[in-house]
Image (tube, rainbow, N blue to C red; front, side, top):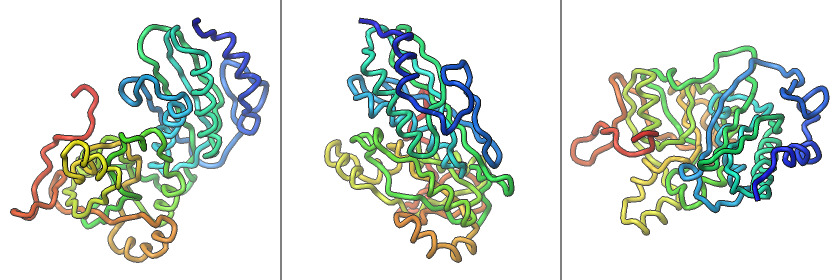
Length: 306
């Protein structure tokens, strides 16, 4: 039986509480938010069946991932989350129970990080199940937000945790690094990005945006990358470099700044690892046993349309 927009709206009015984030009655076409300090930060992310999750994935995992993907982009901007919007496209074959589980999970994950679900849109049409989550956050009124184009020659690059093998299940349950992003920025990070399309590809994007050469010296390998390697015969390092959907944060610091703040940061972020250094030049360079350094050729990671 096809799901009903009217049924879901009635259920939403009963079940999703957003009073802490909004003013005025619920159920309107737009949410009027309570005022918050700082500059608004907006981002949007899609989560699509067959791309980001497989058919048959439980709704709670789908909804969590959809919310966490958008929140991870806020984390990479050192923004404090405030609210989420959800647009959901589903065929008539989807059960209302599944859609309720998805919506509840989006709200539950968002609320846990200070960003409850405050609105959105439902549409019934053929095609894969698809979610688009827009996240609203705030950045302090003073200071410059971090960006992937702000790395400078001599900077030290760090990552907040080990990488690879996320498709063994971690891609559905990762936690956005909100507090880590705030701590990195407070400690002096001037460039940040989350690892969504693979460490190598995302570092190459940072190198291109900042017009520097990044020399990747150390790659922390997740146990899941070793498990994946035992199953497919690839090297664990290949998984750590290219699997993606880790959603750990990359950050760049002036070298002297990082030397000064490292002890304090490691207490806040125990899995933080320095992995690379920015030099004069262009592109991402990987350590090579025979030649010293070898430029990354651009294969691996994830790019839509390739």
